[in-house]
Amino acid sequence: MKLNKVINLLLGLGWLVASGGAFADSSGFDRPIPARFQVQALPGHPAFAFSIYGAPAELEPLKQLVQVMRDQSLGNAFDPAPTPNANTKPVFDYLAGVGWPALCYPGCADMQIKGGRCVLSPENAAVLAPLDRAGVFSAVQLGEWGYYFHNLAPNEPWWRDVYGKEFDQLKHLMKPPGLAGYDRRPTNRQECFDVVRDYFKSRSRDLLGRVISVTGHSHYEAYAGEWGARCIGLEVGENIAFTQSKFAFARGASRQWQLPWSVQVSPWFSGACTTSGPLRREAGGARGLDAGHSLSLYERMWLHAWFAGAALVTPENSVAIFFEKPEAPWTLTEHGRKAAEVFRFTQAHDRGVPFTPVAVVLDHLAGYNGYMDKPWGILEPTVGDRQVRDLFDHQLFPGSDHIHRKPNPDNPESSYLRPTPYEEMFDVQLSNASVETLASYPVLLLAGDIVFDDEVIAKLERVLKQGGTVLLTPAHQAALGPRFVRLAMHPGLEVLEPWTDPGTGRPAAISDSRLRRLAREVLPVEITGDPIQYEINRTTRGWVIELIHNAGVAKKPGEPAVTDAGAIARVMIRPRIPWASAREWRSERTYTGPEPIRLDVGPGQGVFVELSGP
Image (cartoon, rainbow, N blue to C red; front, top):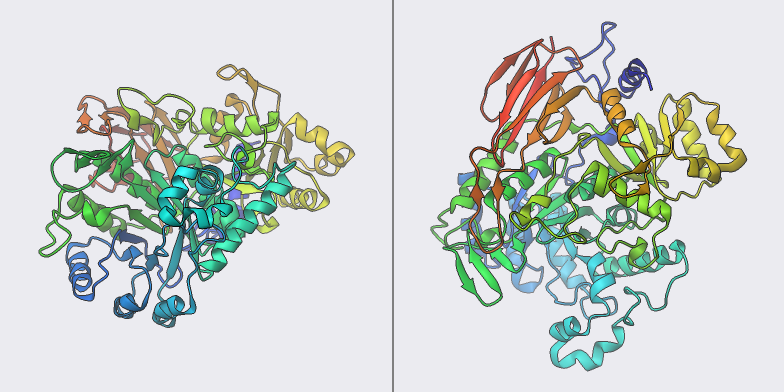
């Protein structure tokens, strides 16, 4: 694919220019970024939301906390707010006036169990009604439902913990062992899809139809959007792997379904948990500010989620971490001060729109599940499934799997955010995405087993007619059969050369060399030097590059973080678009073109470089 062709396509899609476009071409062409790709905010809340986790259920302490959050610039949302019931009605009446998003837990230990006792009533809905009338976003969390469905639904010890003496009355709701949450072994992907959809929609109905889906150990974000979630939520941190591929799934689902997505950063880490106070041993593991994950990782996670387009970031357990005591005078800890610094930073800068010119397209029924390593948690992977898994875990986000591979013993935190060889330029879309969504990406990379029915072929043909590029494998060509001719008429279709990844010994969806060339073709800058994680956003004034050096901070669950001051990433930014000056947002250091920008990024540090046009 020629570079000038890609630039022309990006211009046509509006990616290279914006209103008042600093990078408008010589003809004065000036279009906004496609509306479908704008960051989807929480309804009624155009600003980025940063929440306190664990709002008081009593009115006066809550009022105190709101004032502290305002005075300290500590956030503008509650996730979770108290459970909505008659006792907490004054709290929600007050929050309606404050105007901050309020997300709730349903207040029952069996929130994931279909047919259980966790069913919210019209009385619960009435408590939230003042928020609706005030235009304040609210939702009820359905947390870790993918993990529950496959792993906890047949787990008797977990059920006994949940129901205690009532276990015998409700044990009939458990699923049979060995079937990953299904009543019988499904024979195909459609059956799996139907069963999991029925489960999710049943729980959504019982939770007032206002669910925020929060998934950690699964990649079911696109399905949550399709099945009616109000917000597509992720849990990261904890012991959860695959952070960056989960972001790609959630952002793609957000754009497909025009829904906000959110990130909850968990402080749990192999039995240790961050709380206030000194490092100490308690029943179940270590506690204290130095327990759990490092403050460095929290900062990188919060900022990267914001830059990647999340509408809401929730630091889990923050009411017990950000304050020495969760009560007046609400004295901030080191973590609380860092959180306030991060929130002020997000309020002071326009993050723009994540620039993701490539959509990895999977089949609608793919049921990708990195944690289970089986489609829909139960089906045996095909060659195509292995290609998808290898693409995410070995090529795009290498080193992100600490579930099926042993973590680095010296730094088990090192797998949570990883250097990106090809920039985080990817969203994940499913084949049922609208043609408007698919055509908004300059490049579609088809991966895995795809059912090429007439509707899918027609959408691909539309994308090609509009000047897009479609990359597919010889296996896809074979699956298309005679219908391949319809697509081959267009110059943007490319059948990729077969390539076996020497690291896995398996055939890959795309070669590393083609990925490198693709990055050269579609990215407005080139990043060279030491390995680093980076993402590029488009703003109304230009481009912003986020660079994150994840090395140099080592953290074990029950020990303080250790920083290697000499672990410096030396990188160079070479813009491929016209630019006159650049500014690094955090240090305020400036640079002048046309020389490349040289940066030293410290251990665990994230920097943001904004390019301004001539």
